[in-house]
Amino acid sequence: MGEKGVSDLSKYLKSFPNKKIAVVGDLMLDRYVFGEVERISPEGPVPVLTVRREEDRPGGAANVAQNLQILGAQVFLFGIVGSDSRGEELLRLLQTLRIDISGILTDPSRPTISKTRVVARSQQMLRIDRESREEVEGSLLNSVAQKLVSRLSDFDAIVLSDYAKGVVASSLIQQVAQAALRRSLPVFADPKGKDFTKYQGITVLTPNERELEKATAIEGTDLQSLERAAQELFSKVKIPWIVATRGGEGSATFNRGGAMGIIPTEPVEVVDVTGAGDTFLSVLALAWVSGATPLEAAQLATIAGTAVVQRFGAVSLTLQELEAKIALRGSLGRSKILTREQLSSALSQHRTQGEKVVFTNGCFDLLHIGHVEYLKAARERGDILVLGVNSDRSVKELKGEGRPLIPEQERVEILAALHSVDYVVLFDESTPEKLIRAVRPDVLIKGADYSLDGVVGRGFVESYGGRVELIPLVENRSTSKIIEQIVERYR
Image (tube, rainbow, N blue to C red; front, side, top):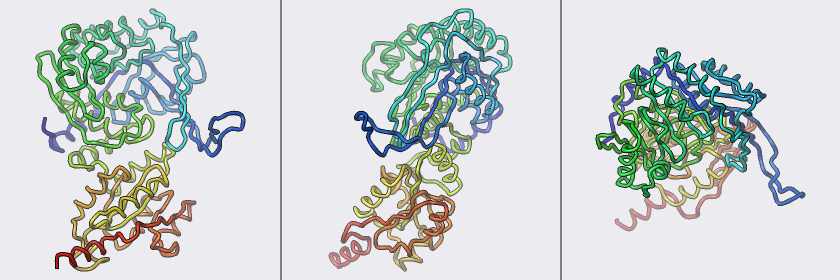
């Protein structure tokens, strides 16, 4: 499938804020404990985490609801929480997000599902789960289903977020699916388990390739195997559409008529897959009911899913961020190339995760091993590396006539393809002072050929507690020396 044009996909985003979406599923509270590990416990061979910050976030179906709300939709959430402090905190978070929680019931016999992640330098060290493995009481599930069905006229779509914790049971699905079918209301589900027959009658299933393989016993994750698995599932379950997520390969759409659509994705460095399925499901549903074709909806969802796996934790994209990702979709590394405004928005998300931002800059005309080693070393000083690149005009001002040899657009795309680089932004000024003030890095990096007193932006960075570091350079490797060698050799 060819890529749709930017305007073709972006136009659907305008309808997102007008949509009303019901979400039903397993509600969770995600807790994050961020800290630093600096020593090993004398009591045993285990790391000691010094806690710096703790944070609660909506998880499970509540994360799907949050994704939809941040994308502008009006969201109505249905499910069950326990009669405990975690349930109270989850409801408080949802109310803060202005999500309708009138469809959430309390079950005093069950704890609110929670997942506590212990994190050091963006690396998850441990996850602690609190949940009940007992089946949810049937009358309670029926009450949740009836609450949703009684309000079907309020919704544009229904999303089932199944984490196999008991709420998205066969009885609930069938009540919802049958009532939605009578109103021609689309129902989307992210499935779990091996038995997909319980999803009978819904509109779209979004399994990943491994889930599709388990549900059909057809092994293999290549396209031919996935197509056979999809058709096998269609023969068992009465559903019109399957949109399968394929990790780094993108996604694929299948319908009962045998048609298949392939949505590729660009290669990216995966930081954390937590919540990627929630984001995919949310964007797919919103795009679908906003008039996108199934193929277009899957492409939008793939772009969104690819964006969130490059960040730590379950994160939600804003409409503006999704539009920026669409605009930057296409060539190698393109999703890393941002304007200052887009960069500011992206960095705010990283900082909410407690990630440390590193900044450096340069012309990077004729990329060589010295540049590569320098950028790798800079990236090791923090969690996110932002690279400021001189525009063609400013390179000419600094280096003189005949430079740059490589145009700015090619330079930024080559740099964005490096794993060590998270974001690339062009600047046109003679110095990066204004860009540094916009980025506000935790660490400012320059090569050891500078003195600390000569580093532009040092005073500003140190004024708020940031630090400046000088990194040794690879000896005898520079663009000027390469140019001299070329001239001498081919004189």
